Image (cartoon, rainbow, N blue to C red; front, side):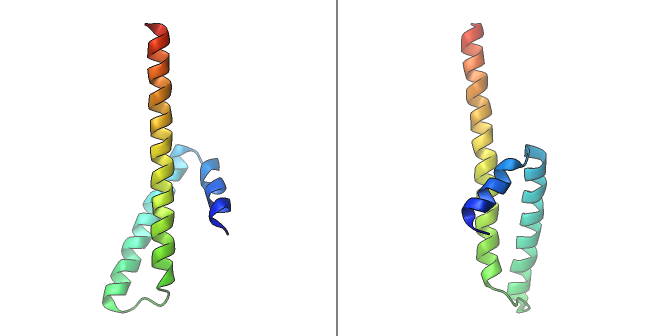
Length: 80
């Protein structure tokens, strides 16, 4: 799956699904880092992939927060 396809999939999720997937990703990243330190990690490339995936999810959630805040500001300007 390419990065573009992955972002389309993430953008299709609602906030709750995305937050749940982010928690899962962080837990998996923690486990992979632990395996790396103990020398049990077989697939080192998965660390980098997962770090980028978690960063994409964080970026998408932040983008949605900013959009919601801007919409609320515009609403308050119209009401005032």
